[in-house]
Image 1: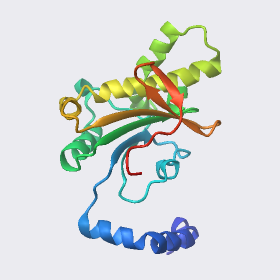
Image 2: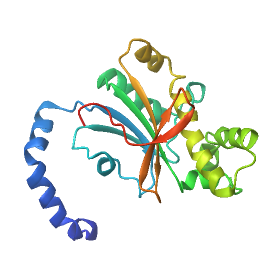
Image 3: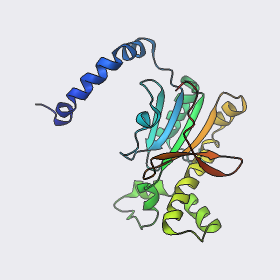
Image 4: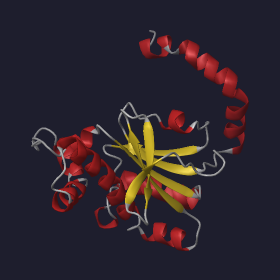
Length: 212
């Protein structure tokens, strides 16, 4: 019995294997050594490899609703397992948290989610809600569109803070073995902004880790 997803993607897969065959063979024989951990949203419109022009083996991925890292004291086992593997086993030199506008997770903060039907989603979005509260407290003058953008940006900053709550992440930072990056992908504008810590704002541009 054929699989329609595989059938309709056969031509693209052949092209991919032909163009990347040598690299894939080398990765299979030598293993992976990715240059960055990419923490992104599960949204189907976010395609990290195409946004960064990355090849197989360059990005180690963690994707979930609203590009979320639970803080250390609320550790979620699948997330911490990825972080541990990335830092202890792969020793990635960069970690990128990338949010995006029109994020369904962020928009979900605006409605009452039925916890009896979607208990996982309701609890997960509680990890994002501090970003919403910070924006509403400090930037109450914003229009709805500006507010959404601000919450998306603040959520990236929140997740960067959460990432640094893990002792082994802090140790890697203090030893200069790890560099953190906060990005927002602005879908309509087709641009990426990067977080400027000194200015506490996002600057449009696309700085990428070395060697990409």
